[in-house]
Image (cartoon, rainbow, N blue to C red):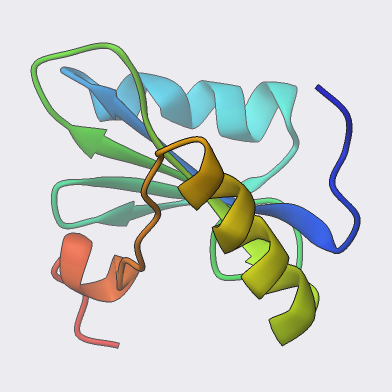
Length: 102
């Protein structure tokens, strides 16, 4: 798969029965800031509040990937490609997903 112009990684959400086990990955391997959230933890890699979220759940693995479009034109182009492949995309408010007040 080739890189899509105007598209960059927004975030990754993983699910784990033991989200705290991911803290050492964040701190020791990635050199990132790690903070606890209701129902999981957040790993901060850059100026964003978090790039990797780990939520408590029964499975071990990837739950979601969020992408950022450079502008509305790129967003519309990506949406159209998804429609052509009969895939759906949606918006998620991560604060609501993790019950964070801010």
